[in-house]
Each structure stands twice: as structure tokens, then as C-alpha cells.
Image (cartoon, rainbow, N blue to C red; front, side):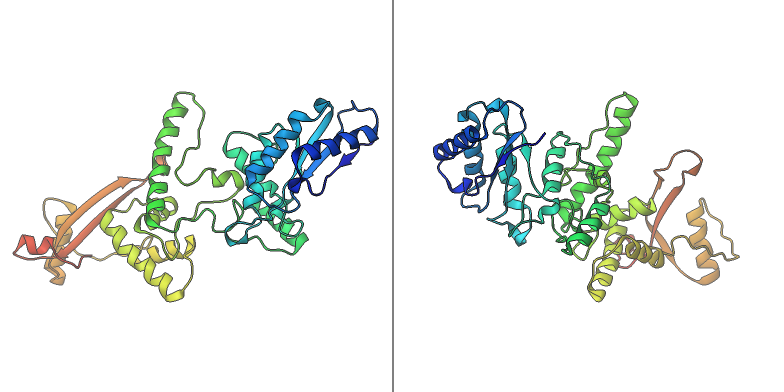
Length: 356
């Protein structure tokens, strides 16, 4: 069995009634139809109008073509009108999504839009756009990086860092407000999923700024870069070191991260950020000294011992603690102690700009 396919090359630049007349003539030349495999493929060879114009053309064809149920209407959008940074996705995706609403049957495109002059519709972006709306297309992108590796090797064309879904910067928040919202979103989602799990309800992904779970694509959310906020840094430390830093510590460590990012002029990776934290606060390192102090609690006893043996006069300004997110026997606790130079004036001590 074979099939016919006809592509009116200038469909997007042709009057709708004339396009239907031409396709009717082609269908008549093919002979009897009814197999359901004959295809009319409508390219947007050159985008000369907004995406909704092509969608209107497709809808007109589907409404006015005779024996519509016996032919397959296929779309073949291009990206001639472009988008920001000349990505191979933007306008072609919008054209495809709108045209699909015209009751079409089929879509032609390329992985990451690598085709034609300015790129064909990006099948990856189109599929994942629909996936975020709860429409599965049975295309598996759970290892998106693996797909990227194969495509770039075959085409010898790189994926732009800001390409939708596939770009290396896509899951990175660059400003404080999104990072803060995402951090709070993860915390809220954790509580919500625990509650839903206990009630036997499905686990729903509902996050600000992230329409799709990066884990579904085999990716991770990276919060920290040279423009990161305190919240972004704090999120990363909490995710990878299980430490929920108090606000003043967030501010202090953020300055450390900024200094590294500025001096080295690069993005801060997870490894670099967590290593900086370990080195700055000696996290994971242990030391011991033989001294003793007496008071009404362990912190007061420590301060007493420092005064007695080392003539170091400090006072407590802030204390906080929390258990780790791990459950069971692996759960641990973290304590945060902020010390300032002791002073007879309590207000002066509390307002000190230097602390340890």
C-alpha cells in the first residue's frame, strides 16, 4: 500500500478559497479516496503573517474541503518570523499550537527545530508545551540530555543556552523574586504532596516559574548564578546540604558567593557553592580542645570557657535549630549560633555589625 501526499508550497501566502479549489483538483486527480491515508500537508514555507492567520487558513480548509474524513490534514510550520535571540522555536511553535485547534491530524517538524532555512517547528518544544497542559503525545523525553547529545552530534549544530526546555540556562532563575518564589514553591509542594500521599491523592506538579518538573526531563533546577539572590543561595544549600539557613546567615554567605562569582566571572555551580560553604563555615570538619566551663546551659558554658581559658569575651545574639529533612534513624539536627563581642551595653552588643 502506498499513499499520496500533496504540499501546496505557497499555502500560507494563498487565498483560502483558491487553496481549497487546488486541493480538490488534486484529490480528483488521485482518483477514488477512502483509504484514509492520503495526506494534504500545509507548509508555512515563509511566515508572512501572525500565527493566528495560518490557524484560520487551516480551519477554513478543514471546514470547506469535501470528504474531509477521508484525508489527513498535516501541518508543517516554519520559523520564518523568528523570535527573541533567533531561537529555532518561537513563532513556529505558536503557529503549530494555534493550527492544531483547527482539527488537524498530523504535524511535521524536527527535533529542536533544526531544519529548513530558519528552522521547522521544534517537535520537542511543541510536545512538552502540550505535556504541561496535560496532553501526552507519547514522545519520551525523560533523558532530554541524551536526545540533545545525539542531535548535536548528527547535525553539528549547538543548542542555544536559552532554547526552550533544552537550553542549559532554562532551569536557572536569575533574579531574586523568581528564586524566592521557587524556593517557597518547593517547600509548599513538599507539604502538599505529603498530605496528598496520605490521602491517596495524585501527586500534582504545581510550581511558580517552572511549568514542568525538570526531573521529568532528567534535569535539575539550578538556582545559583552570578546574579543570584540570597534566597537562591539558601535554596541550594538546603537542597544539597540539608541546612535551612537563618536569614542573617543567608546574607553573610550570599556575600561570599557574590565575591567568588565576581572574582572568577562565571556561573556558580552546585559544587562550587557547596564547597564555598564548607570552607567558609568548616562544615563537616571537626576539632577538639580540652577546656571546661560551667553555666546553666551548653552555650553559656562554652562562652564561660572561652572567657576563662582564652580571654575571649562573646555574647549570644541569635540561636536557631532544626531537624534535617531526612526521616528515621538518618535524621540529624542543625544548630545556628550567632555570637557578638560582649559589651556592658546590651543595645550596643545587639547592634554590632560584626558577628561570628
